[in-house]
Length: 572
Ligand SMILES: C[S@@+](CC[C@H](N)C(=O)[O-])C[C@H]1O[C@@H](n2cnc3c(N)ncnc32)[C@H](O)[C@@H]1O
Image 1 (cartoon, rainbow, N blue to C red):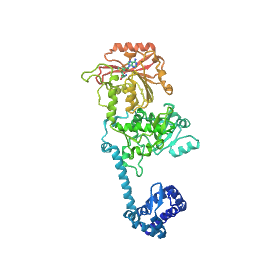
Image 2: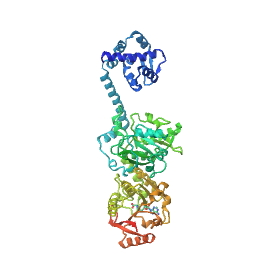
Image 3: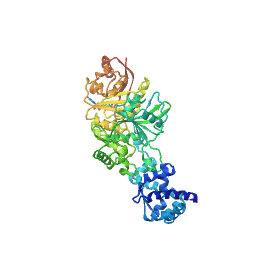
Image 4: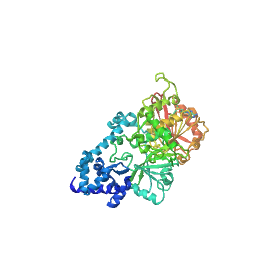
């Protein structure tokens, strides 16, 4: 450090000492910085950082004690202040009393560079200790497990926000402030509650989601592939940043927290096309009540700790549960409660999924008994899944991917698609065909199956990263008005919806609702052994209820199944 710089340092540190001389009990750092910045006409944050750096020598000399909150002078410090009125000599004398002090006075740049390196190293070390070297290596080396390749199965939707050119979030937030519309701004995302959405151009977006939806717009602009939830900031652990899941995998984290009763429901991950600008956002259930009671919050955090103890997730912040983001009652603005008083932790980027493939497999295994529909297979070892589950190496009687290839081709030949459409899946089983429709970009899927089956449908679809779905558990009869099972926000989408009627007619017959529902096309699959004559007979039956025609048809056999007729029916 040259003489001029040493003098400047001495002036600043003596300025602090002068304040402390009048306060033997010490002074809060904030107050000291405030007074110094006023005197120096400087910027507070910069001054704070400068002071923390330049006080190393007097601290190491034992003249000053300080932490990030409070400064106090020792007796030696008071004497030194009086003995060395010249600022350069003052700081030079302080430097002479310790090696670190001397380094900080004479070689400030290398000293602070090494100090930062040491802090970074300490932070990386804490992350390694928390996450475990094995989990880190998997992520760092990039050996993706099978689930990472195929999940989430659901495709994100791109939604046009007409007449709204969202260039930058800061100006948008100023507009919201001017209009007194509430919002929340965190480090990585901006949150718009339902009422604000209704009062802005985003009202068109939320029409296709439940009315209690809020929107969490990721601050980093761009679509899902360009956008990141957290961008690198100085001082953050690189291992920690590396552990944060990409936006698509974060939907799995959100679903996992929700299905374990600690996170709000995620309705979707969307790309918002605001004229020329693309933004990425999560559509989430709004939980508006800030946590007010310690017991409520402690109980919620305990549930999250349980998940970590079970080895399902890991908190990836270097300080783990000691981080302010997990301190009750508000967890740095992450802890909320539903109107029913249930705890919800609203941020999901703080968690990494651990052994997710095993978890998924367990959820699928739990569904085997109820999902199985048909003969037991000695070869397969008794009961096995009816529908195969993506990302899970378990036998299934039906291969959902193979079926979907044929069905997609049939739909394409007549120029229809499930994309942006409501799909009603009657006899949905564990929902794996719904997952396929969502993969093709369906707007929403509603499925019906027996009450013992649908809890597994829900759990599996969530574990696969699906969000745009709902289910009804019921023993469906022909006369059931299935439209009454839909949530009101879906009613407008009945017009032009698609019906999925796969291997179910033999169990329920033709639903009477098919006669009056305004569906656009019906995807039909017959049962094993169904002859061409029988197929024609069933089509005639439906024709008597409502005029229809077979627009495309074929035959396929997939998995362990015998050949089956498949067809796309349209109204005439
Ligand atoms: C042969 S499986 C077909 C599953 C699915 N549609 C597929 O093709 O992959 C028939 C499904 O319909 C359901 N099911 C049969 N009768 C039903 C009823 N009355 N009410 C609700 N679900 C029924 C069964 O539980 C089973 O999941």
